[in-house]
Image 1 (cartoon, protein in one colour):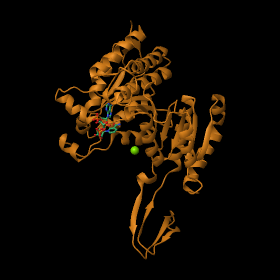
Image 2 (cartoon, rainbow, N blue to C red; image 1 turned 90 degrees about the vertical axis):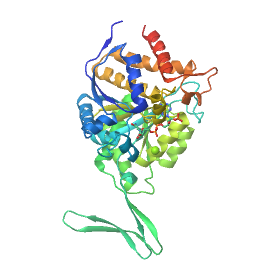
Image 3 (cartoon, helix red, strand yellow; image 1 turned 90 degrees about the horizontal axis):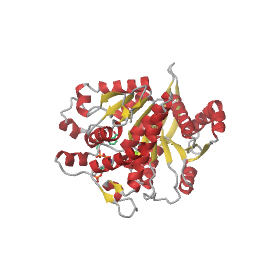
Image 4 (cartoon, rainbow, N blue to C red; image 1 turned 30 degrees about the vertical axis):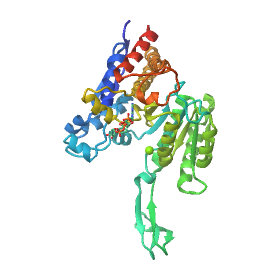
Length: 403
Ligand code: NAP
Ligand code: MG
């Protein structure tokens, strides 16, 4: 069989530890036999980030802006222990944080559903995609403890030096205060990313805040979404037969539990942090989630939501058997191939991406799976296999589908 030809290169960001091992296995077993892979390779492994003073991360983000589609392996975010382990020059920042800041993106996370791995909420038949705003609010806050007898105020200093003040609280007894902010332009990008993604997936978009209580802050989010929807997206949504739906955050939570899924839920930063863990857990686990960063100008970076599976890697280094789950990393590749195929008009590449996903799901449905899935799965006669055997089983099914 002739290999599938690509036009534009994919930006390939290699990573660390067990996921780096999975990355190579996926390429060798599931990709290179079928696709004449055109990629621009960036090694974001921690050793190479350290050698390049993290320039490689910046370069990979710039390449993503240039070519439009990237696929990223999980990477170590260094802490003190890693500085020692890898003899780092400094505690380099999280690559995901750097890339997200450069692409100004929104992260969309959705569960990968397989019959036999049942959500804890039986009504959830279709995936719920969480879109998390990744800027500001409590993640960029300033906080203070306040003593009794102090008065706390919000002060805004204008360019001409004049001040606007508002009382926060007159403290008769000790307490705490917190200052948070967001930016219109960041909220606007968030809104556009969500609306573009809803059009891509042809799914309804929900958005929720606490605007009844937060009449300026949360209300600004609500207004910006509404203005952008009316001005730029209403007609496109109607043509696609999808809906933009705004409600209060508490109502959204209640409706989500009652829903059958199948929509995108745009969340403010904190709501998205909390709700994505709830949704991932309710559907199964992080190793069964897809994750894609979408920038407002339509650049896509696909990745797995989990980390580098450090514990498994140390076992692997000692030659002990491992049973790591490659599904999220495989779906990062398939997502990137599908998008590249759509943008470059290569139907064979889109078809290959679909079959790669089908082969993966079929393998699990046939009862062949990694240890973490076996713990969740109700399929009879399930068989827990090692990392290599799982990959080989997917490879056999993929070969059959593509034959
Ligand atoms: P982790 O890699 O997500 O793994 C935590 C535990 O979850 C594993 O020990 C394993 O449990 C289970 N697990 C996660 N993914 C799995 C998979 N695909 N297959 C099977 N089991 C899986 O988190 P971590 O070990 O705490 O973090 C390791 C490194 O990842 C850290 O340096 C962190 O900075 C980095 N990280 C990177 C990203 C990213 O690049 N997107 C995200 C998060 C964390 P058992 O050991 O019980 O089997
Ligand atoms: Mg969280």
